[in-house]
Length: 246
Image (tube, rainbow, N blue to C red; front, side, top):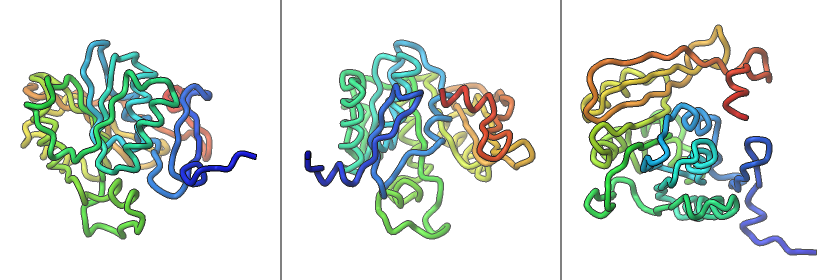
C-alpha cells in the first residue's frame, strides 16, 4: 500500500466542469469559494490579453480563465508560500504549466519596470474584511484571505492602476454592502467603473456580492447588468448559475 505524504494527507482533490478541471486544496486551510467562479465568468478576455491575478490562492482563477477563454497565459501572484506551491502543482496537474506562471511575492512590491510589459486585464478576489471588523480566523491562510492584513483595497487598486495599460481593465468581486467604498476608491485611483452586476442568493434577498469592471482612463459612464440570482430553491441553482458552473 502506498504511503501518503504529509501534503497528500492534508489536501483534497476536487473537480470543476464535470471533472475536466482538477484542483488540489488544503483540507483545513484556505479553500476557494463560488466567488472565483463568478469573477472568472464575469471577466471578458481577448485571446492575446496579458492577464494578472492578484492573490491567486491555489491558482483557481488562472485555471478557469485558461480553460474557459483559451487566453494564452495568466500570471498569478500569491504571497503565501504554501498556496503558491499549491497553485504551481494545480497548473501541472491540469497540464497547464506552460500557460500559468505563479509569482510568490507581495503584490505591493510589484514593479512595472521589471515586468517587461503592462497588463491588459487584472483580476482580484481580495480580502473583504477590514482589520478589526469581525473575528480573525486563527488559521493564517484563512485570515490573510479574508482580512486586509497583507493588502488593503487601496493597495490593490493602486497596484492595478500602476500595472494596467491605458484602457486596461480591472475586474473585482466585492461585498455589495461595500459598494460605495469600492466605487469611491476606484475613482480615486483613478480607475473608472464601467460594468457592474449584483449577485443575490435568492430573488427576494438583498444583493450579497457585486462584480465590477473598471477601466484605466475610462469615461464616466457605467453599465449595470441584470442581477444574477444563484438559487431558485434551497440547494437548487438557477439555470443562469448552472451555466456558470458548467
